[in-house]
Image (cartoon, rainbow, N blue to C red):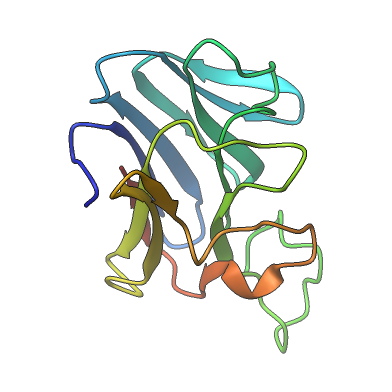
Length: 170
């Protein structure tokens, strides 16, 4: 079964005010080894435990636990990828009320790019409660049914159209 003594990466989305947007990423490493990273746009947003906040959307952020084998962008390790955006955010590329943006999170083990190095589990709170996925180590084998294995495995993404949603990941 999944061990809660593994890496904990808490992604928290918070909207403040009527039109203001603010997102916060909180990282807690409970694995007892490795260094957690959060990156976006090729830049390190956070290294180690702590918080990263931004008064706008956070697009295509990647979180991973480097256990001595990950490349700087998370390759060669399992990654959690997320976009934190509110439906009418300035960061929403459509700006079309018929097609609002949604926050989306997934786990990636794309063959040839990633490898299982620690269990992950994520779910939403404060909107879309309980929706999420996990990738665990069970009876000497990884069990990761809802994980990107191919670049077009889009069905494994967990989306949430609600503002003020929080993402919690272990």
